[in-house]
Length: 101
Image (cartoon, rainbow, N blue to C red):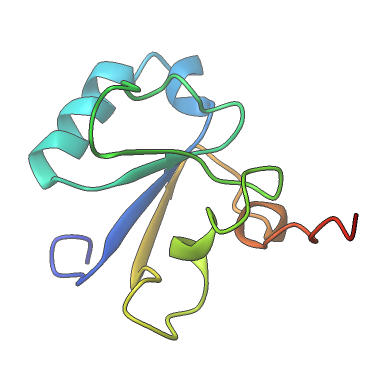
């Protein structure tokens, strides 16, 4: 499914580091050329200097950063999200409220 998706994305979590699978995960991502976003605890499971690294995606991330995880309503949101070693909750996929001040 990931190989045939138009806009695949991986949401990576802390379990990748806990299980010692960082090298295998990096090889998987590079082979498939998949963009990777990480949960807060997953930061560090994929090299920060890799262009496929999208950074942290969560309700505490900068506004607009969760766009790839929303329902496909335009050409931007992902058509296929693979979650690896992460609890994919609404806290990870929803925008945080804007500060009115």
